[in-house]
Image 1: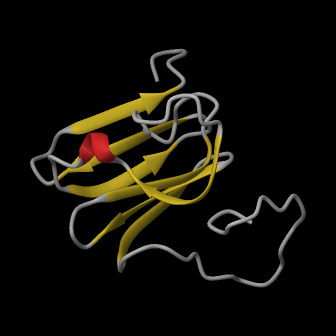
Image 2: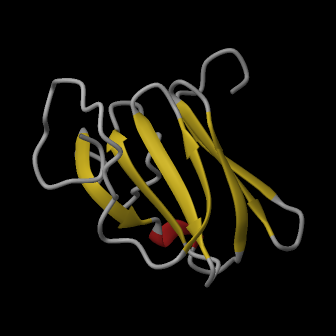
Length: 108
């Protein structure tokens, strides 16, 4: 289950709270990863990272993250919204700038 300690590879039909996040403002879901913005303007990601879609510059060889981790590469900007594609991610800042990362195929 995404957002928990263990990688569980079976469906979970009961909504389960994602632990480890401050109060959340927005969320987005990709094929196998998720992102969230929090009220402070920080951005968190978790799930599959095979194409760098989590934005975890400090851990480029980590291919899966079970629990939400703060994206330190965006710590100098206030993120107001996020969007996840299948294998890429985007963040919109308070200043109107857009950041993108992940699989860079077909102009993504």
